[in-house]
Image 1: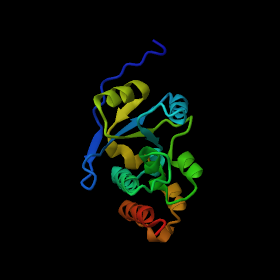
Image 2 (image 1 turned 180 degrees about the horizontal axis):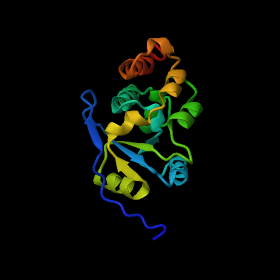
Image 3 (image 1 turned 135 degrees about the vertical axis):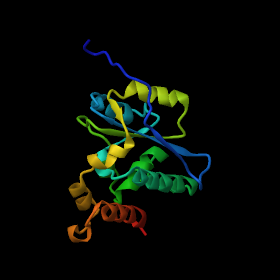
Image 4 (image 1 turned 30 degrees about the horizontal axis):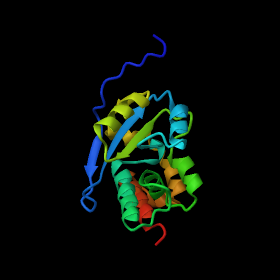
Length: 184
């Protein structure tokens, strides 16, 4: 039936507890065939979501998101947030750019996005239920993340020389270095 959404409970998520910030955890989910991205963007803009939505075309591995989350938590702990909250700071920390608007537009999702990473700090059963209800798409394993990454765009964004990047490990290491060294 049109408009009916048959969905099982979330199952392929990943949760990480931060050693340096033991009161925080980050849970990640990956979805494909998302049909309501425009609605989700509006909810994000209206601050109606307890999580952030990331464009997986810019993410090579979940560790990249964990590094950004750790950077966001560090900024919060030092009262040095550049953005309004840790979820937005997570996106900002991925980018190695000071242009917040461009970063949010690039690393966040757009109205027509079909693949989405959900990242949420300190997930509760209520937040899990909201994610399950609000994301109209098929949850897939996070191990599929690297297949969704646009390596060419990533190299361009982080100004990485093509000749120095010979494989995915080199690219990943270069991206992590660019993220963590930005602004030093």
